[in-house]
Length: 552
Image (cartoon, rainbow, N blue to C red; front, side):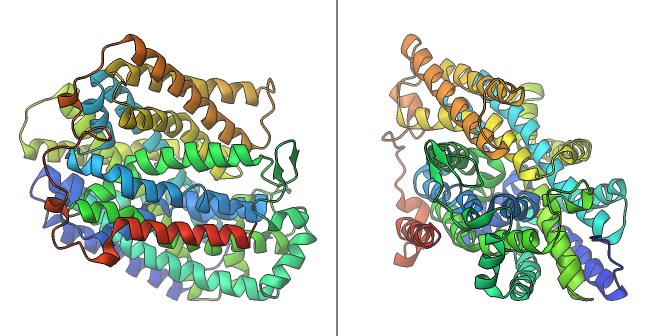
């Protein structure tokens, strides 16, 4: 089955209108940019509902749309673990527990928190590895975007990547984070407008949910493809994920999930742009609610593609890779006009992912690398210029890294591999340092470095057949566990033989050592009962528990 389509004038008009609006938002946002803080953190002035939608939209890129649909086709209903175990609990933890540390410390980035808590070598290591990870992830989004345009409109991969990168470059360079965030809110609704009708039409074509269940039972996944938890027993794994419950809960649900959502600056940056501490805490909590239900718009299309597209994931035809599940459904089900909306929705998703990573890259490069170690003490206008140049550089590097993703038939496998390298060890460093005052400056550096090395070594051993860790996703879970464990052991060990910081130096950076400021100073006017972080967090967790029971 080919997915190439002859887009009509109406479809191209819809695309043109979208690009015009995106660039217009960038032009308007430029009027608000007076200082480097305005460019990198929107002047810490945005309301919670804006930052909350931007928080989830920033993650709703290629990773989510193509990757999760590919997972749905390859692994079935068990893919919900990436949302209900691998996202929502960590988002709640970030909002309730970790945002007060970030926001009250007035840090401009996650690496900057590490400089305050540990030392400059730890700060430099994390800033450097984060910069590398960010351009790699941005490359994934650029490649996925180019893949869709190539498959559906016939544009070459190279042209598609360059056009997408150019549009993102213009609106980020103009309006900085403010432009990115307001575009992410727009993109969130466009993505829903594209995916919701596609999901409903595709589901109707197979006889609704009941008909889809029957078809999945007849597919290669079988009955196991319809369950989240069944078949995950230790020593008796029959679930398509090929991972037991310990690997899922510890590797995905704890290490990878908390490592990504609580320490990844591409996400945390949205919360740091909020107008006060209350809004910052509510940012990930508001984002958790759409995250609960997004599986219906990604996993269901993946399952429909599995049972309706012959040879999906098993054919040598590159058009039939798991990554193409969504484009294949668009080609099959959507008429003229709706095609334009669908393509616009996919473009919006990928551009949101690219923009999220590029805005976090330019902030970390400018503040944590350039200002900290290259050129110190210059005025705000200078660092604003550096930030804009870093935006150009980051996007150019992302264009080059886009082709690395080409070697993966399921880009989610590649993305989770990157997370096991960079986010899993970082979370171990964070969680120990935040709750154990005895953690020392050099423990942060050596723990983080050893965790990264452990992930790389585990990956090489598994890839070369020395150890068997199951499927590609299962392998990533175990790599994350290894990285976390080694980081934790080294961090504790080094802390016991090196000198700790004083309590005054740690005030506001660890649990139980607050600064002088009262929380009311930050939440004035935002203390209504329905805005309480614990209430929002509890509601999201209750929904997750109910859905896990339904799809057990």
